[in-house]
Image (cartoon, rainbow, N blue to C red; front, side, top):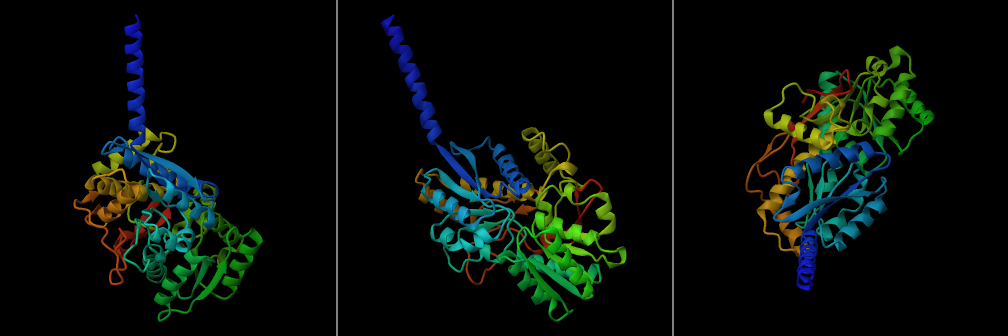
Length: 405
């Protein structure tokens, strides 16, 4: 009996030891996002990455892949604190970025000096990936503002015959990044105006700005703002007389929340509203077998959010984070993980810059999407190009309908 008890205890100890050993083989991804005011987009990005991870059973080379939600609440200092904690975390392999650009523009010196692999599925600010050093560890698969302003401007002038646009821009590095690109494109073509607004602009201030823009005979608005601010400007435009309403050509900030709250049938009938997207939509009728399989997997993982393609909220976040997740997995499979986290992060960065096999994504197939960054290769850490950016509208069920590139 004593021998049996000893054997049982030995077995339990061994099992416990093995569980502990396996639990130590973990790679953690920090998701630095706004889970407060912009939680719809944050959750969409989270679901995209986890869907990609599920394809490899959440495991690479025996290391379990896990995700930690880090809510920066739209605050630059909170985002920096997350980066500092990441550096000290011996299991943290990369950071998945969030919706906002200012956090990564302001903190990019710290991020790159500490070789933090930062993968961006949404934030579009041009400077984010263009840190002037070979130690550039930020990679984007998203709209890029050095191109977005061109696509928005082209569409407004060529498709909507806009003759006197007004740039209505968030007063942040993101807004000013777009101002540079749009102004450069427009300056030799048409006269234009510029107005800046702060975060959480209120209804009365938005109404005054819209009224002033229209009174100065501008015939369209280029809007660069997030979901909450877009809501205020749409309400303000709805308050104008029918013959005073002018088209709004927007960045994609409007798609980062529950668009049903803004874009009712009445609003869509009254206001011409177009916005930029990458050139793929979950609700497109022309889906490949691969694209259908991704949706089916996501529906199995997140049945409440993936009832139908038309009902997925902030779909760009899901699409981009999923494609980024596949690139990240490919990079991790390409290296030999050592367990030394600093070394593994550096190997991961190098692998992203030299992916050996094409990777199929929802938007396109990625064949060596990244390369080592230098001043002559400004787009080296950009997975998408101008031809991958399209304009879109909201359909009957507020699904995203890609219309033009």
